[in-house]
Structure formats: structure tokens, C-alpha cells
Amino acid sequence: MKILNLCLRVSVLSISVFAPALAQQAPIAKTNVPQSSLTQGATKHTKESAQQYGLIGEMPNGLVGSVKGAYKDAYIEELIKHINKGRMIVYKAAARKKNLPIQYVQAKAADTLYKSVGPGHYYYKNGKWQRR
Image 1 (cartoon, rainbow, N blue to C red):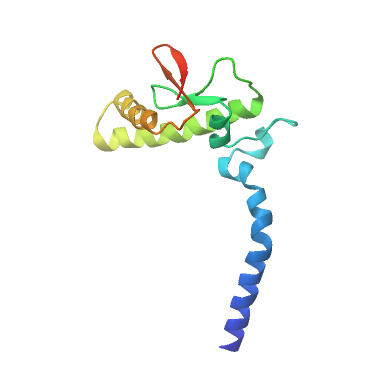
Image 2 (tube, helix red, strand yellow):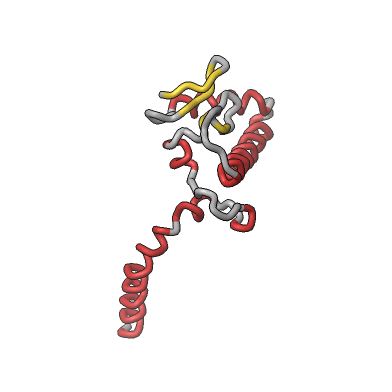
């Protein structure tokens, strides 16, 4: 029992020591974009930070796109591809499960995503990017 308590204390201590350092590495870890696909010197954004800076926005097909006129780099393009790839996997699975056309699933997802667009974030509507 004493050994178990000692192991638990060491585990808690190591988590409290290393957790702040791990938290600072979060931007690249959250996106799961392979490190080899990133260009050197590119700004590394998460989906949330890219939306906050107006680099990406929600589109009517349930995917994200690059906001026209916004700064672009290779990392943003990779981030968009990664987000859209993940969303398409979910949309295809839902379409298969419910026996619905994928475009219908995407449109319904877009409606939900448009409702959750935060203040200052972009979404594409009526042929142009709009800011909430």
C-alpha cells in the first residue's frame, strides 16, 4: 500500500510539473496536422485562432474556406484541408447511416455551424463573406 501511495504521489507531481509545458505545445497538437507537411516559418494556427483572426470561415456546404482577402500561407491551406477532410468523414458516415444524400447532410451541418458562428467570425452567405 505504501508503494502504491508513493507511485501515485510521484505521478501527480510529474503531471503538475510537466502539464504547463505540454499545454504550451497545444496549437500544433490540437490540429493533428502532420509536422512534415508544414512549411518553415509559417504561423501555426488552430481552427479557433484562424477563425478569430478572420483567416477561415464557415461555408454553406458544411466545410471551412479561406476568407477572400485574408492572409494565406501553406499552413492555413493544410489546416483547411485537414478540417474539411475530418468533416467529410463524419458527413459521409452520417449520410450512409441515415441513407441520405451527402449534400443534404452537409447543408444541415452548415445550418448548425452558421448558428454557432461566434462574434467576429466569418461565414459565406449570399455570394460573399460576412462577419458576425
